[in-house]
Image (tube, rainbow, N blue to C red; front, side, top):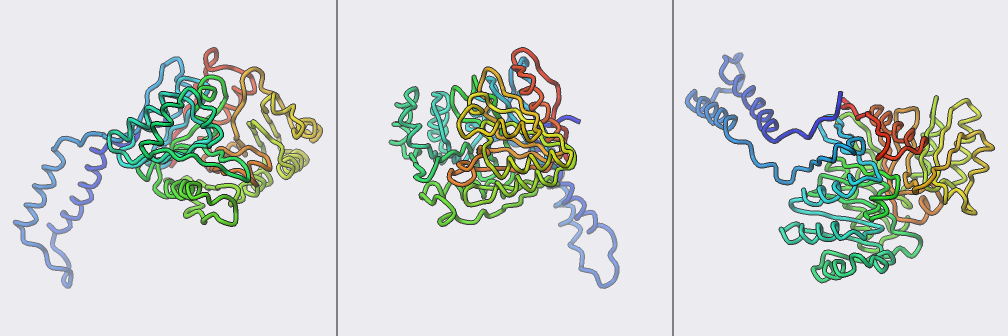
Length: 406
């Protein structure tokens, strides 16, 4: 099965109408004694006529409907699917898909749009935010203050956004404000490892995911408000409203380091693996997770890891230790590998903004998702293999799509 586009509103209207038709049908048949009295027949017929007219009426316009098409040459950088009836979009870079997806996400917002961004330097994005504001969307953008000072390509746009009251520059004194997420209309969430920059779009191996869930959106909105108010760290943060979110039958665990224990969740996932652990990491220096991978190798688990070449040579890197522990480590040549992904037993995927480091877990403002979805996990393995083989999308493409989960 392949991922299908989100359900159209006409189908939703038909589903609602069918439910009403079923309830009306009950009213037309004799009821046992002692049951409620029936409405007059004229009233019931009137309701049925109204229902049929609703079914025949033109479907409403799909304003705010998020969807995207990509250049066929980059088909494999967009995976579509659903968790239950909720659409899922997964974007992979470097490719033009990343830029198109951001603009489509912003343009689809109708009422509210919150963004919490570590970096932003593309005029097409700043203009999209300004455009959303001008068409009446309540836009609120948080941007790391230090990176904003270096974003020369969008300096004028950032100044205009401040004047319009839609941009706030923030700074985390204990670490980095390292998030890269957006929330649209209280239901749609964008997150991942992708920075909204030219480097992120053109040069870096990275990812972004779009999920639809009011509960997940509430989590991210609460995190946005924490950062806007300067509530950094464990002492001042609010509890995450919905740490465990169910989208269809798919369980999604949501963590916001440093206040939430993402490290512990990832360690537990590695410790419970029975067959395979695959890691794609810009930085993997956390001692607890290094030890967990070593223990996994000892009990016979295959561990594959692709690390960014530049970061693997840093003083804090544990590349040699990982290899000595028996981890199959490969360095990504050429472009920067910016994923922060763990896949366990091709069943569960960890992704988000946090590097696997003490900074990512203990000091920075971050967000992490742990998604229990086998079909999605197997698709993510294909990206791991592409990075392992160092195959750019412009040369070799793979043909795996995310099937629908029940």
